[in-house]
Structure formats: C-alpha cells, structure tokens
Length: 489
Ligand code: SF4
Ligand code: FE
Image 1 (cartoon, helix red, strand yellow):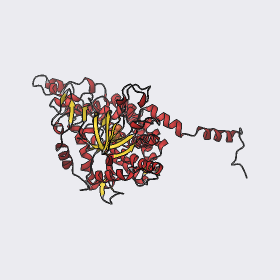
Image 2 (spheres, rainbow, N blue to C red; image 1 turned 180 degrees about the horizontal axis):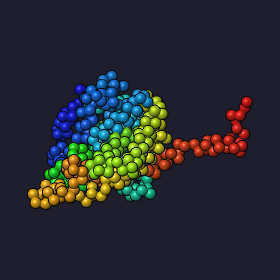
Image 3 (cartoon, rainbow, N blue to C red; image 1 turned 90 degrees about the horizontal axis):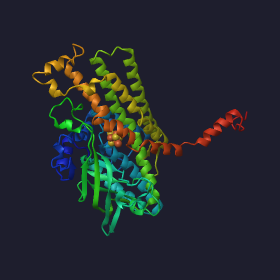
Image 4 (cartoon, helix red, strand yellow; image 1 turned 45 degrees about the vertical axis):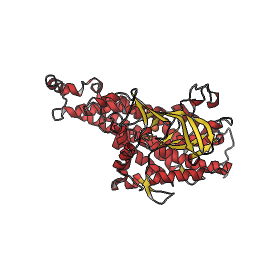
C-alpha cells in the first residue's frame, strides 16, 4: 500500500492509545475532539490531494528507494525540480487548509537524516545509513506521517546541554543496553505530533565532544511506552467548543503544537541513527533547519494567499473595493507574498546533490527566505486588518446574530452592501481574525517568527555563508584600491 486514503489515515489514528493531556485532563478520543480535529483534517488533506489526479504530479513522487509511487511528503528529493515541487505542494496545501498542515517536518527530517547518516558512516565506519533507509522504506510503503522532532526544553539558555543543572533539559541517552538505548527529555512545540505515526528525533544544536549522550538521532512510534503528550493552547481555541460554525473562522482546518515528553523511552538499535557522533550534530541540525526554512517559502505563501483573498473579499462585501488605497494595499500584500515564494523557489533551484544522492537546498537562500518570513506575514496581516476595519474584533457573537429578539437588530446594523448577506461579512471577518490573531495566527505569524529557528538563527547562518571579503574585493577592484585582475586587454 503506497498511498493511503484520508479515511485510512483517520483509522490509523483511532487504532492506537496515546497518553495525551489537554486542559488538565487525559484526552480519550482525541480524533473526534473538536479542538484537535481541525489539525487532523489538515494532515488528512495531504492524503486526499495525493489521490486527486489533478494534483498527482505535485503531491506524489517515485520513490528512489522502492520505485513505488509515494506521497511527496515521504520523498527524498532527487533533483532541483523535486525541491521546487516540494515548495509548490506546500503552497497548494496552505491554500487548501489556511493552516499548518504539519507533515513537512517529517519530510525535512528524512532528507536531513538521510544525507547526514551517509556522511557519518563514511567518517566513522558506522551502519546508520542502512538502518535509516530501512526505516524510511517502512514509512514510504505505509504512507506514514512522521514528526521531525528537534527543539528541546533547553533550560538555562546560557548553558550548553552538559552544563545544565538538569541534564534532561536536552533529550539525552540515560542507558545503553544490549538491545538498544533508553532516552529521556522533552521536545517543545512539536508540530503535528499526535497526528503522526512515528517520531524522528534529532539533536537540538551543535554539541561539544564531551556531550555524546545528547548526540542522538532515532525513531520511535508515537504510542511507544513512556511517551507523554500535553496539547498546546492556541488563541480562541475554545471557540471550537461553542457549537456554532461562524466564530471559529476556519471551519475545518487548524494546526497543532504539542509538548512532548520522553519519559525513559526505549529505542531498539535498528531505530538508532546517531549515537555519540557530536561532530555531526551541526550538520543534521543545519540541514533540517535549512529544509524547513525553504518550506516556509511554500506553506506561509499558501496561507498568505487565503488571507489576501479574505482581505479582497471583505473589501468587496463592505463596498470599499474600488478605493485606490485598498487596491494598493492588496498589491502590496501580493508583492510581499510572492517575494516569499520567489525565495522558496530560488533556494530550491540553486540546490545541490549531497554525497548520499538526495538534494539539499541552497543554504544561504533558504535562510534569506526564512528571514523574510519572520517579517512579511506580519506586514501582510497588518494590511489585512487595515482593510478589514475594526469590526472583525468588535463584532458580536454568532449567538447574538441568531437571537430571536436582538438578532434582527444586530443583523440590520451589521449590514453593508444590500446585495451581500450579512453572514458572509461575519464569516469573512472571523476568518481574518482567525488568521491574524486567532488560532491560525500561531501558524501564520508566531511560527513564521520562531518556527525553523528564530530570526537570529538565520542571521548567524547568513553571517557565516556570505563572503563579505569577496564583496569588499569587488569594490576595491572597481575604484582602484586594488589592481583590477579583469583588465588585461
Ligand atoms: Fe509545514 Fe509550514 Fe507547518 Fe512547517 S509550518 S509543518 S512547513 S505547514
Ligand atoms: Fe513549522
């Protein structure tokens, strides 16, 4: 079975028991929980679209491992064309869900771990790569969702993992047994964690030679013994419990972030892909971060498309669409959004083959992409709020609109154009609220800031990757500070 249906995916989630908490209580049937279900629907779309002939080229690929048709979310990129299709797929998914659809972290982790394990084996004579290939074949054949898992709790930020008063501040090996490892720690804000089948854990950061216990990469099933999950809150999440379907803004879709505790979890050796190779922790971290910084040039652009569409719609509904400043603001939103897309495509087109054979994005351009993503969605959101007017945050609840006595009055005074049903304005305003300061703002704004690394992480990479001395030489050649080597005719 290389491609699952959305229904089969939902059945997978129902078939297992996980220890999940939310609002201080254990969640029993999380698949049908109204707060969690929208995030599951977002992932389910990755299955549905892969089986839609219209999107086949973008949503599926031919496996380099098995030759089978697979979901692109489980693919090892084989060319720059594959890297570009990845970004296009993410834009499409953002457009269809208006939310974080979560499955990219696994895809980005596969590609980073695949190439890194190959290079670890070359340097150290280890056997990690073949183990990882076996794991990935299993993922591809069963069309699984995998959470790429990196960010630790991190304790005191001024201290490295081995210096922390609590060694569990960074996930680490606590026991090495004949049959495998035991690990303990916690990974914060894990995107789509309980919507996944498997977890692929990587180290959080560069490590010193004496920090071997923290240099660990492995995979475990989400329902492995010792795994504990605590669901992250999102702004206005409890609106999903109110029973209506207007005030939630996005009717069907949402994102998910989960505090993920590894409480002495056993990992068999065949699932261990790094154990103590501190000299490769930087490589796996930078490659995963680079791929995910590319990803944002697709997913955030797709969500941006929906916000631009919502701003255009509300301007139409309110009779403001012909105002020149509204048109200009919509152009500005498009300009910013397409600039992000340009960055996502550029770092893909400039990708290169790794020693293992899969393709890696251009790291400098991927970091430029993400640096822009830390800013432009905020400006796009500001312009959307400007166009919407204040009513999207002061509008009464849908229950007031439906009230037998005051409902007609609320509707009367919420009417804009006579030919536009007031409910359309209500729904569109709530969607703008959802995207710019409600539940979806976690994915569209704060995740744009901190996901795949906070802005300073990109600036460190840009500093490292840009050759300023070379640029200085270029200037010196032109103005005669240096003899210009090109003038030899
Ligand atoms: Fe995918 Fe974007 Fe969500 Fe990351 S933030 S998992 S790239 S949708
Ligand atoms: Fe993310």
